[in-house]
Amino acid sequence: MREALTQQMRLALDNAQRAARRLNQDFVGTEHLLLGVLECEAGEAVWTLRANEVPVAELRRRLLLGLPAGDQAPVVTGNLPLSPRATRIINAAQVLAQRLREPQVSTRLALLAFLEESGSSVRQAFLDSGADLDELMRVLAEKPCEAEA
Image (cartoon, rainbow, N blue to C red; front, side, top):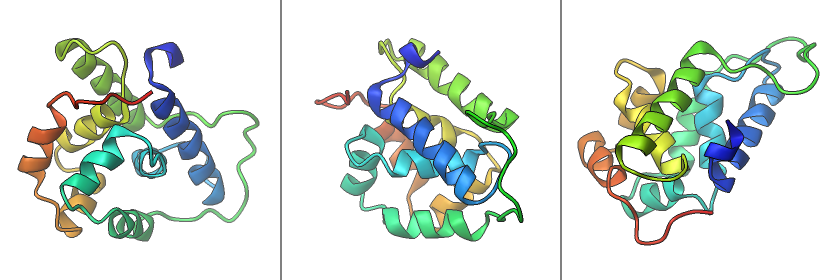
């Protein structure tokens, strides 16, 4: 699966692992995955958020507010498993890549997949941060002039 991802998206998954471990979680959830995407400064997702004046730091803060921290470090060695919802986001991003005829899943497509999932805490964090979701989704669906690595 990792070969179907851009370098930035692979980095986002690694960042999500670290975010989940910092909070002593036994799995990578959607919030961890988005935190991982937001750490990819060279990714299309962060470029798009900044270009659309979405406050990345505020979004990160709101995501962290809703995340519980475990009492003990996870016993899992190696990569933590993705939650079913996080897996669904990655799968949805792969479908978007195929539909938009893009060779790999980028952080932009992952972000679009997040926003297309209604009723999620991630969507709510965007709304609470003042993001215009309809406009953001429209922009994310457009292929950028410069693709991420």
